[in-house]
Image (cartoon, rainbow, N blue to C red; front, top):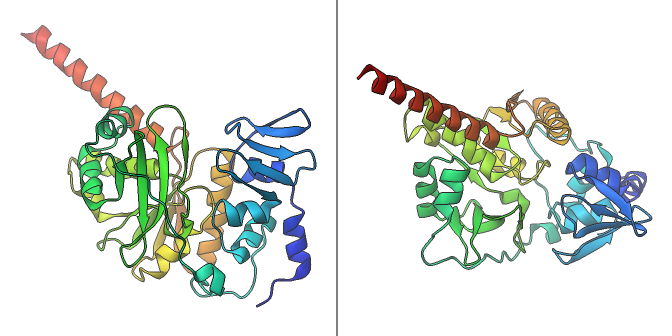
Length: 318
């Protein structure tokens, strides 16, 4: 069904600064005739609040639709929905996956070169981030994550044929992060299980791995994480969720586990309503801190403190 021209015009006229603040949780400072993102200084929005350029990614455009289709690799129809907050027809029992010929063409993913011997990845993910070592090892064996030659962690998403179609990079040092060229967000990073009818949905791979690690820690079972599904959206839009669901008819329940900030909770509430209307059981699981990785790191620290306390008491008794 053709999208109404007025709806497209509304999407094209959306204020970019307001959109970035709501959609990504970014904040901007107005200086020298443009708006500079405080979280990503290389992202600039011009004085008209429509034209934008992300220098580190080498991409720019005019308006929200350009950003969603060029940077987030979002299909045009879905980009219009996100930009306007409208739900476009036609309604579907599950999720409409009808794509244009251009949208259906596979993107050419460019994966960073893998480091021969991973030196930093375990220290970063396990020691600093608290991720369970059994999970990291299993996913490295599978190829779902690895360390590249620049010392970054690469998280890989695969399609139904086992082909890599998405990859995001997280810097071990500093706050560098981003999607690799040619990434298709519909195939974002996930951990799937044939044993569960639930899927837990997150903004980032590290939060998904953190929630999975909690399963192992709570149950004192290194295999516990394998009995649940975890999906990273690589942001706060649900491009990856329809493709995950339509390949898994056994999924009946969706738990949205987005960040505990305004952008994350607005997105979680919006998606919860959207997928409840499609017939899924939905709920929202909020982290105690900002995100599930902060919860995991805090929980690990509590365990270490409790163990130190027990050791001290034993020494005193002796």
